[in-house]
Length: 262
Image (cartoon, rainbow, N blue to C red; front, side, top):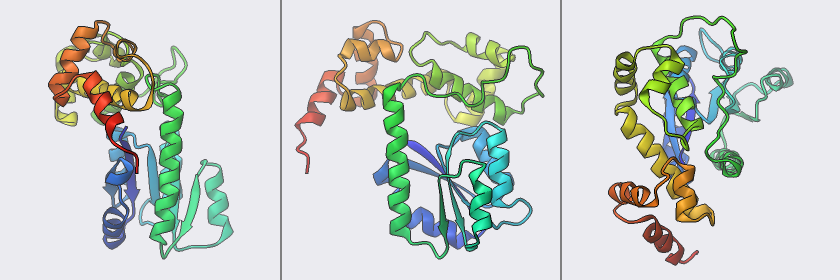
């Protein structure tokens, strides 16, 4: 399972150090970087990151204002604040936004790495309990409530969340476009432009990613895993999995278990 991490800091050297020094790939994390609150909000609308590292002192929109806006938009991300200010008031201001941790500059990178690793492991553990029904932060408004017209980024963020919550169903473009209130053709165009792949390619990739994770970390049968990600025929699940990984689900599981743990 790959987690999305968003780094937000107006100082390019700090962003570069964070991207270079922290072993993101080793922790199965993908990094997004933003140098302003505005840019961070745009990235959030598309990627909905799992973890956010944010500087407090930034021009135009400071870190606390940013995380307040992110919470307003429904973000459930774990937030770690980075700042050169050590006054308690800053830390206390973050409490109402459910900030996970507060790290002062200059950054102790090993300490930061350990914190991020622990947060990531907790997120994965929570999702292990129910890997197919992840919390959909953007789809919780009361039925019938009037909402503002969403921009393309918001539409695609909602589409991604909707897909994540329904990987085990026979999900199609018609259902998703109808949920978003747009035409199928417009949805397909937006999806390809924003995600860089077709709807079917994206859903298949997410299903295979979930299958690989469950094959490695659960004792569910091949059939159970297939059904859990939307493939109700084992033969078809095996065919799709083999096309994407070069091996059958059983071979993938056996190979992983044959590797000695160091």
